[in-house]
Image 1: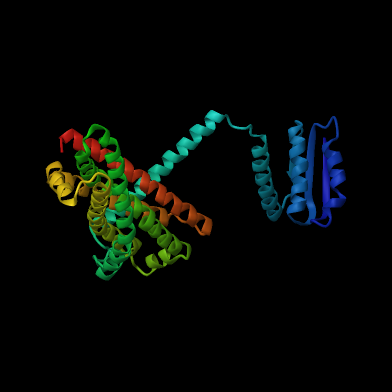
Image 2: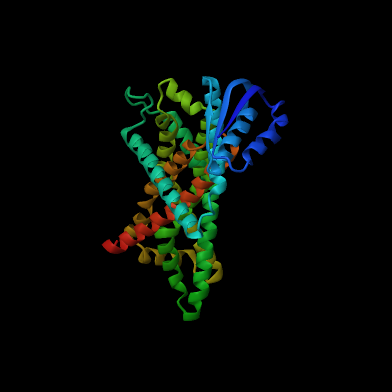
Length: 365
């Protein structure tokens, strides 16, 4: 058995002089037991503690019964912290690279847990919204109408130009492609049925929701996320206000009001683009287009699209709010969650549109 009694100050400036001797002790052959006595050690910092811990750890790896003696309370805390950090570092180095299949399964599992957390956060926001404004935590309901109308102006009125322009172009493209294909069969007039049904049931509300997700959904995440970064959300809680009632509720109500109205404008713009293209491309005058449109569609065709709008608005607003509240303290986190908000909103909106299409087919609507 070998006993090493250490003395003096074991600090950064002094450990270089004993490093070689410590390595020689660790490399000694035929050693069965090692006692390191630190009772006479004066001052010690992290470098000295690491040197002592390295000696003990190296001896134990070789099967030597190594232990520390004479530790003071302060020395014990420092040596224990260095030992924990050393064990974690060595554990990471000793780990073998994970199998490719394991990495894929781990990534899938992490996404499932993330989806669970997002769902719970969304349900929390939705429940608080259904209960009302809840401006004050636990003290009645207060709805700020000025905030709601301000958000309607920003998300609804401000989005009219881009929604009308994009919808008009999409309607014109659908009409042109439909007329080009149907002209081979001499059925140019049926392009009216194609444009009317496709726009009113699917494309009108879907394109509007996608544009609102990219325009307003990202704005919701950026606004709430920047407030979260500056700790303004925490400040609202400290002064007794509910962040959901103050920040999220007006935006959700504004989206639920604005998206159906924008969908109606998008439908008119798309039909207008279809009328212009069929008039120029297929020689179908506007009067004939409208007469055929009255035959091709009915009230159910119009409502089949508009019914989706409030649900899509809720999804866009809730996802934007959830991602905004998840923002950390860095600009990188803000950009990451803004991107995630837009991608998730568009993805879920398209999934919801497909679910509605299956549901309408099941009930013959």
